[in-house]
Amino acid sequence: MKNIITGFLPDEFKGLLVKFKQPLYRATQILEWIYKKKVISFSEMTNLSKDLKQILDDKLEILALKQLLKLKSKKDNTVKYAFNTNDRQIIESVFIPTQKRATICISTQAGCAYGCIFCASGKKGFKRNLTVAEIVGQVLLVKNDNPERQITNIVIMGMGEPLANYANTIKSLKIFNSPDCFGIGARKITLSTCGLCPQIIDLAKEGIQIERSISLHAAEDKLRSKLMPINRKYPLNELIKTVKKYTQEANRIVTFEYIIINAINDSKEDALKLSKLLKGFQAKVNIIPFNPVQAVDYLPVTKEALEAFCEVLEKNKTNYTIRRSRGSDIQGACGQLRASLEKN
Ligand code: SF4
Image (tube, rainbow, N blue to C red):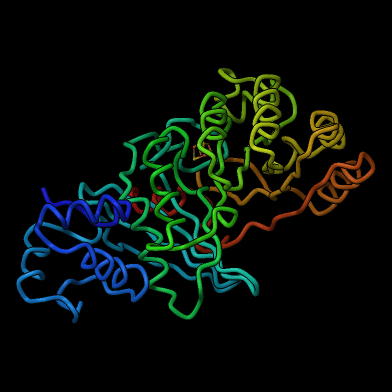
């Protein structure tokens, strides 16, 4: 099997070229073509010799993904991509342009084992972890497809639980961050987890200054266990203790995500429980109105319920932001596009 360049850190790639008896500067040239000049074919790398191009063609590939489908939202210009891996797993990425930012949301697993009740990825079950080349390839392909915008942010919030694919996610973060590759500042990268406590602590020890976001979605155990089965393994008191420990060790504020769903977790009592849970905590909550998902019978929150919920948060001085769901006309929620492609 051929090695795939997007799965290598720059130093590893340099080591590989040394094995091919090539000078080190060749590695820098090739990475420049791929990551800076958007060239993903060896034949177009005009400063390489014919012999070297032949070696590269024989021994290496650049990407491990092929684009399967692309849908652009008429509402907000969000673009959703479905990619095929070499073993025909379908994974999803999203390009989210706003006035100030151009963000790519990526997947780290094909499917997901955690079964959150509101999530299309969870509904279809877990297939396998993505390789580094498959994680990094999503950013490269989406970036190349949107050359008019400079990519400012990466969010690891797509299909799968990134901390359950720990080693490959960490290596991908280093490639995103490396000036020889994407050069995206660590603080412009956000990793979202459903709350795997041991890995949250491991991540703090990595010393990578990325933003971390914890999916909360309920402020009491009974409801959270119903919405997110992981809560049975790591209940709220353990999760909050872990996150507090993490914020102290890493000296960082964390963000909690709260998908607000009609008549499930949108009452004033729910808001009060949320405020109490986060009291005295250096944290911010993103309130995300639920984006209806096929095969999930939940409804979006009403405007009135959302306002009442936020009033309680304000009264209790809970730091929050309302995040609008994007790409609702193109199956923008995680796992939706894959679910519909696999059905067809
Ligand atoms: S919300 Fe995240 S952790 Fe939960 S099932 Fe979906 S992808 Fe998995």
